[in-house]
Image (cartoon, rainbow, N blue to C red):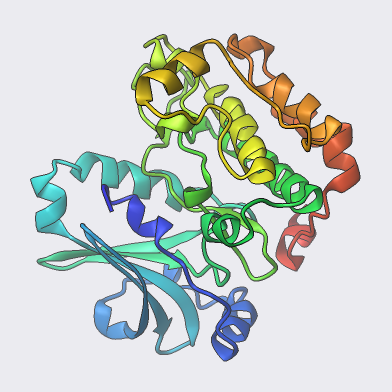
Length: 309
């Protein structure tokens, strides 16, 4: 794990019978861990969900209410050594204020002399990356569903002036019904103008404007959706090459090579997202209305989201 954000990526839990059922049943209870000041003794700690450089993630249960969570435990000394205090504070600040069925909830956090504890929503089906590795590639229905969920979640983020900047399979977890949960906000940023110049993210997913050091805005997330859609359907990202320099070159030329197996509707969507000029990329509202997404998506909102909408 290369940063504190990676701890969330490690929530690789598989369905756990009674624990999953309990998590699903208690998720709507009013005694959420967001309601009061907590300490580590308030939790029963279960199996590890992931381990890394800055700490670990555990399945945990709030003793008094049986509320199932993922408890992310970070070591202060490691965060300070890497100079990542500001990034961690920003991640907490952003994620704590986002409430959407396709965004992993950060309920609360607390700390002691040595550690910082993040109380996160438990995503019982683990990482999308693991599902992709196991299946090699996904079918049209699964991919279109994920793209619709993601586009809706990012619409919400952009309305809140939050750019994610690092959408990729490793940063997407899967909920009780297999729904996508954006789980990593380590590279996200809240900016009223939605314009930035920092280069970040993952090489295969970097848009041209980031590589060239141009000022960019929320449309970097549109590029990432296009890359993700391609990777889910094909099994590898569109600009993957034998060297970093070749990957950069292909991104800047938007050198996308579609296999014959690529469905025409998906190809049309990806082609409208992977555009060198950010203003030419298909807006999120149009992704949701795209014929290929409309035909193939099987998105099901959880009951709480249905009531809210």
